[in-house]
Image (cartoon, rainbow, N blue to C red):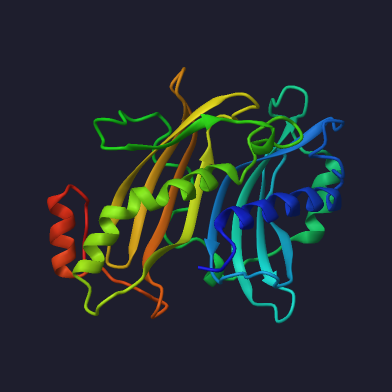
Length: 289
C-alpha cells in the first residue's frame, strides 16, 4: 500500500522513550550500563495517517501522570512539515532495576523533572476501540477451545531484542502483522463478496492496537502467537492475540487490534453488510452490520 507499517511506528516510539528518559533525569535508561531502566508494559496506539517514505517525521512526548511506581506518557508522531498527527500512543511505563528487571521506584529528581512535561492529550487522539485500563483477563485461555489459530512461531534473536536482551516493544504487533493476511483471508473474501459496490483490489489497515506485556520475553526465548477474530463489523475487525512461550505456556503478551477491510482503488473502508454478517456468523465469526 506504499506506507510505513505498524512496526515502524512502534520502533520510533521506542526511540522516543529513550530520548525522553534523558529529559527526566535518566539519560542511559535503555543502556546495559544503567542502574535503572524503563519498561513500557502497556500501550494503546492509534494509527491515524499514512506516513510515507521519505516524509520527515518528529515526535512529541509528555507526562499525563506520574507516581513513584509508574509513569503514564502520551506521545504523538507528527509530520515535520505541517504538524499532522500520524500516530498517537498512550503508554504506561515502570522503572526497573536493570540487572534483574525487578520493579523499583522513580527517584525524587525524576519525579520533579517530569512535572515540566505535564500534558493533557486531546480527546481525538486517545484510545477509541479499547479501554486504557487493566485487561479483563491475564490468565491464558484454552486456545484450541476458544478457536485461536497459530499464526506465527519462532524465537527471539538479537534482531528482535533491545540492548538489555528483552523483546523489543515493536515485536508483538510486528509478528501479528506478518500473519494478518492469512488470518483475515476468509473474512476479507466474505466482506468483499457481499459489498455494496464491486471491489477489484482489497487490502487491510490496522487502526488501533493495545497490548499488555505480562512477562518480558528475553533473548533466546521461543514464542508462538495465537490469534482469533473476536468480532467483525460494522466497520472494524477486532482481533485478540496471545504471544506465549510454547514450552512453559507462559503468556508474554495480550494483544488486541482493530483493523478494517480496505478497497485499495477507492481508498475506502468496506463495511460489513447484513448478508456478510450472516455469512460470517455461519463460519463461527461474531459479526454485526
